[in-house]
Length: 590
Image: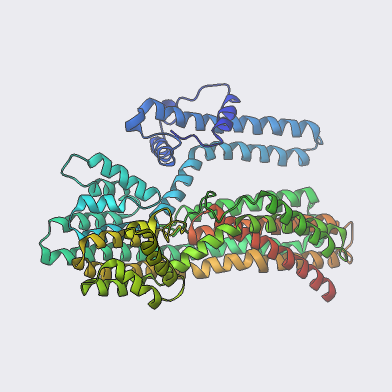
């Protein structure tokens, strides 16, 4: 069993709660929540599957997490008492402290029960983005050889949780008449019914007459592709309303209220800088995070980018470069805000330093992924040309060599490199593509690697595999089309979020601070200090840039750390510029 890095923290929090947690009694009226929690822990590998570890051990892990939530609630209560003891004795001062402590305590308890479930749901969403590719692998293997066991084993060689689960089902089916596809489909039927139908059709194709097999395999691909397309279209339609509400009440309205805060204070409203900090920099970001999480866990599938590990030769250790970039960008922030009020220095320095550091740290990962996408760009043309030649009786090796100069871009270069490896090292197709010195050895593209593996199988089958290679080209085109359509369905939502995070939100925030400063000069009574107001709103703008960008990226691609980090870095740098531009521009206009 693999424990997360923060498991020790959970155990320490649990010790803050003086009583043991017995889930059999504590969850008597919430058995569904207990089952969801234990299933989430098993999926996350925080707890091994109950069939392998036993029910008692699995329950103990769930009790550890729930007890940690109670311990965090106790700490929140103690913290509230300390704050109340050091604060003013007036009811106006004690009421927000008590309300805040109670909210944190209840939130910690609820997070302990539902946090792992939400995280498991998000990871399942990312895993299901690979469902069409997994089914395509099984279908293509069946076209070469109608054996469901080999098709399932070949499909399980992919990457991600979905392929790992299929590999486990295949392992359990060894020595039985089954292939593991049926058990795999049943496991994921609750989260993706089209996947179950598709894998059952793949299994049925093995026993179908030869004249019906091709049609059955086509129906399997149609089932997963149409299912993915329909589910994404429904989700895009469902999230438009909640996203519009999130945008209006979590972004536009709070920023618009900044400009009228001085007038509200004159009218007698109990406004203060600490209250603004609590509302703008704590409560509103918490609401945005909660609403964003609610949207993400309802996404039916995500299409995650290729995984790039830190061991990749083109991803060096950039800790010092990251630190240097952050320091340099912070210095730019200091120099750039020299003509402006002193308070503008802090959001500029923090935003630019963190943003530049994130961009530098994750830029190599993006470069490797861009190269992988370039390799995938013309795979359809490459497969069609190779398949036609193999169907005419040409060997796969020579077909690859001939297709290299005919295919455009990085894909053609990859084929030419593969042919060169074959000639120089005298190796087969598989080694030329995927071996230690193969053309795809350092290209983290599951699609390209699947194509290479199938071409290696085709090299053994010879001329009969030519038709399967041509069909492979159609399947690759279908997969890319479904991914493009899914992103297009969400484009209006994610585009609005990204533009608000990096440009419009910060621009409005800077302008409203300048307008509030101008209005304060003409109001009666003591105005809110512009410096404190600007820092509170500037912090909110930076938090807004990070949260909305992460949400937009998660909806589009899943919560991939490198991709989220890179895009958040760019958004922070853009937000700083827009915020300062809005402040300066509105100040001149005023």
